[in-house]
Length: 221
Image (tube, rainbow, N blue to C red; front, side, top):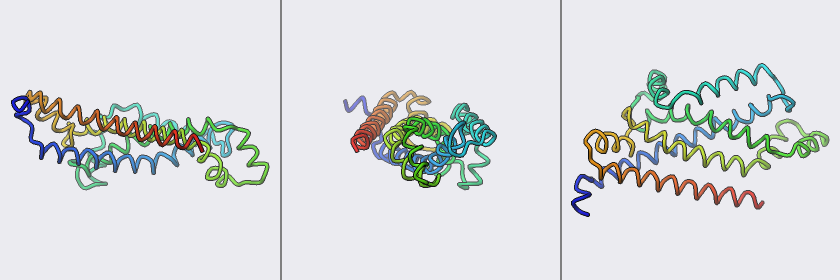
């Protein structure tokens, strides 16, 4: 076993793991902050909804679909000038977060929209009949009723971001993906590749388990 792990620098593995967690945590936070209101707006401006605006909905849907359809590796490269403007660098954890958010926030927004569409229309109409404002309906009815679906969406987005962070390593973002590319692939160090893949798999399993627990807890309320 010692011979098999001869190429492993555990200090470097630990540092890369921390970088991956920082990228994941920062990008997931901003993806939720931006994607949640975007998803709510997509739902509200949809046909037959509280703020139905076909033109606004079409523009938002187009922007979301464009960002979702771009392969993430292409988005990383295309966004380099904007990333430099926002973060001051296109490398490292700071340089990875803007494209990660740009790739994940529209994805999460669609999941939020889908979760809101699952809310019983009768509950919304009852709130309207009692004179509730749109803001009160969103905060007091839609979001609480859609909480399990939104939490599931956060979980799915987090799992997707693990894969995105691995791809971000290709353009110098650091993290486990960077180690897998530089040492596991380019230098044919199979042990490094296996360790990084196992760590990414463990991270995905942990995220999924936490997400499933939160969804189950929210569903029982």
